[in-house]
Length: 161
Image 1 (tube, helix red, strand yellow):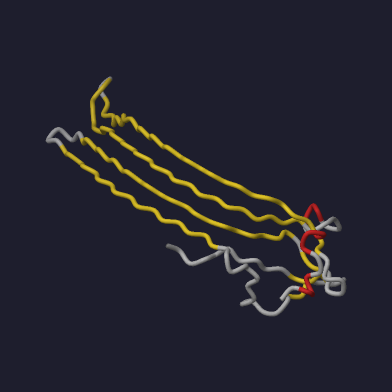
Image 2: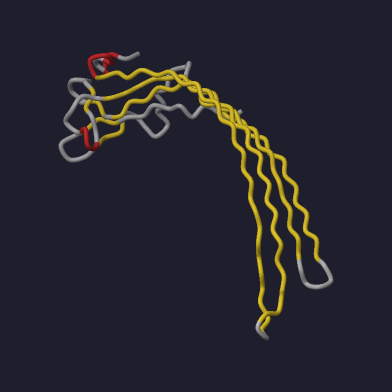
């Protein structure tokens, strides 16, 4: 499992620049936030070279991955004097936007690849041919639940713990 990376960072805007709240190590993620993932893959390949210069290449793989997370994000900054959230980017000057949610996913993928390559003579000249086929089958299952919130839901950031 990967360590939690569901951090929440923000800054205060000033007329000329944004000032960090505390330091680079400030992490405002709630204790319940996490982001776990795990992936396993097996693969094999075979290469056969023939006396006439032709090669046959075969390969295949099977991958299984899972993801599980509960996250919180805030897309904006907090006004230093009022503690009220302000949107950024195309939403600058508008209300702060944020969200929280639960996501889980499972993915299984099978692949197979086969190709041949080799020399041949045609029209009095030497040529190289490569031909092959690739097969991929992927099954995904995603479950997600989320909600959004605005500045009025968050309140005055200066009053947080």
